[in-house]
Image (tube, rainbow, N blue to C red):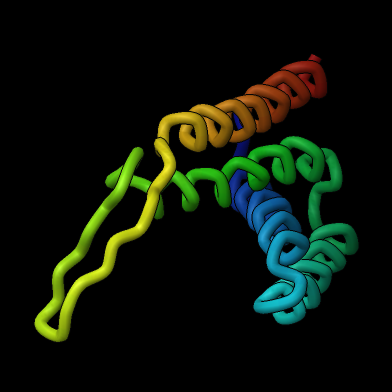
Length: 124
């Protein structure tokens, strides 16, 4: 059974819910107070009007997206990374991006695999 464009859109929206939940919980004392309500509203709309069968695989996929952002932020690592500007410079310690890329890949590919397996079983 082929997956329609509408199902892929709902899958992507469920992934946004998963990513928003992780970001909201990890940053609850800063931007999380703004992210959590938006994520909750999106989740409520998807529960009300969307395909609930895409919820679990979409949320699992969304868990990997913030991990890729952390990998992007540490793309010059590992080690001490210095930047120069006209007014001066700064140095910061960065982690290796590879463990973050691997963990994100695990969640993103795992969620997509769950989605495809579930759709294959529904089609039978």
